[in-house]
Image 1: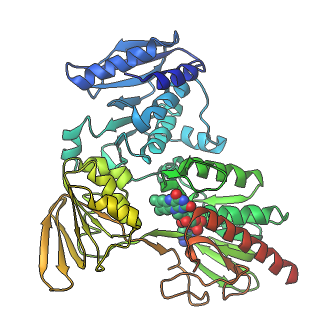
Image 2 (image 1 turned 30 degrees about the vertical axis):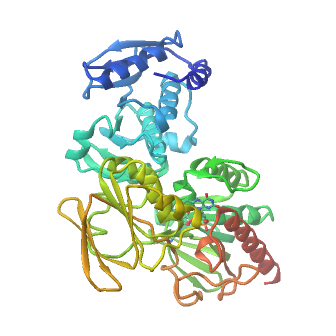
Length: 509
Ligand SMILES: Cc1cc2nc3c(=O)[nH]c(=O)nc-3n(C[C@H](O)[C@H](O)[C@H](O)COP(=O)(O)OP(=O)(O)OC[C@H]3O[C@@H](n4cnc5c(N)ncnc54)[C@H](O)[C@@H]3O)c2cc1C
């Protein structure tokens, strides 16, 4: 089952096993069962600390990872955890054997405090780069708390179950058989949904900051590190620490690092930020800011934080197409991440809305998986780079329609088509298909601000060369500003500029 290089890697990891581990396998006569048995036996043959037992588990084929002689951990894999899930399997083996997971003690304490039965199931595709983080988070929870179980389910191995539940986006997490969450979710986000977080008064009681950063993406992290290095009191409020980078698969233009992955870069950012003792208030959303004696930032939970200066780095999010059917069929055929959700549309017909670089890249990627891709572009020609267009037009299963204005996404319980009008002839057309990938760019996260912060007509915060906004003491950086380009390295640079601008402001005022 395992290729030579993967086997060599695994052999090294298995030397780190602490206690004895039992893999319990439930298998039938089908091919996936045979592969599952072959995989667990191969793994067991590589370490004297692993044994295999036959078992009757809720799903066949599947296997569970357990400590020898102890109650079952509840960590199950239904389907073969290779591809992106191979790391999840390795970590499960190590953690079940007794190796401590790499999470903060406060997170461990929260997990251990969870009462009541929590049975999680995560539907994944093995090519989904967002899935392993969710699987690994829930496996950690399952290992640490006997009230929690978690099963990873490969959608390709459990097609009927996926069809029955109408799952058209991964990861899709179910808790006690009810839908719980979709998309990449960190362990902190999962905990925030089931454990009570800090209350508003706890946050409002905090001492005022010298610099308070709103947003925990590359711009916010860089701004906070630059501020903290000046020895001043610095805090970060972030709805989701890491920002867009969490959703990025491969990064090859972060200068000095030839190649990395988004979640890896976010882990380094977090480590760097924590190294400076910055007060990180993750999973908190800013709602309003007002300048009084100090700048006051109101959060969604009602807390009010005070600071002498503030840096807005709230980034951007996928732009919605805003037609009927988009919200209704989100995760029921309407998708935004071709890398994650593409495999669920294998052999089906899909549309990509948007003919820029991201739309055309998505179409090329999808054309290798699905039956047919229709690209709908609003303008009279595609805007993507020539090299991408050439590749796209060379594909036999892609149709490009320009001058197309999307009118609606149709369906019953899931998407069954898309309707557009030809902007030249005003004729309406309908294409029957099962998936729609929306790729029409980004919109800045600035709708929570009032007129005191001047913005462009696209909502981008206008900043000067020091990162200052129209409100003295308030600075901005990254994708939420009117910067010409949106990139990680550019956001980090502008975060540094805004922090130095804020420090300058503090010593003059
Ligand atoms: C799929 C994808 C692939 C990409 N690939 C690359 C690449 O290969 N190379 C590259 O250089 N760039 C890439 N980019 C672009 C890059 O990710 C962005 O330019 C960069 O992340 C912008 O950083 P930022 O800090 O300004 O904003 P973001 O990364 O968007 O972070 C914004 C932060 O603000 C928080 N936030 C938002 N609203 C609020 C609120 N009201 N209250 C509190 N917090 C809030 C968010 O939770 C988040 O923490 C990619 C982007 C995407 C989507």
